[in-house]
Image (cartoon, rainbow, N blue to C red; front, top):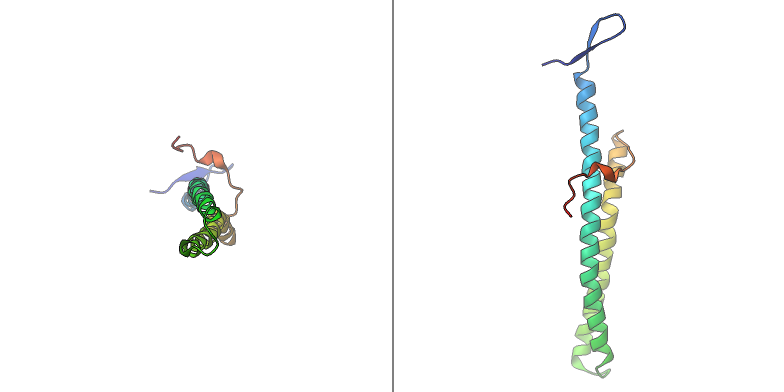
Length: 121
């Protein structure tokens, strides 16, 4: 099916490709908005878990002697939480990378959080 519009002279012209491109750009913008929302939610929740792990591990280290065998293992946990923090930062940057990739395709648009209207509460 061909969609058409009439110009001032009354001649019809095909707008199918214009409509398709417009929908595709809107879809990628929505995808980026959803990815931004989901990445922030996940990063926030994961960061809360990491904070609890770090706090409890630091408390345990503070309460044990410097030569305790378990101290080294607890320090390894803290090193792992540092690496996990780096993953959180990368996750938060992912929507920016998606937007940059979209811009490289000529589909650059500012992110509009209002596009995500079905966000679960």
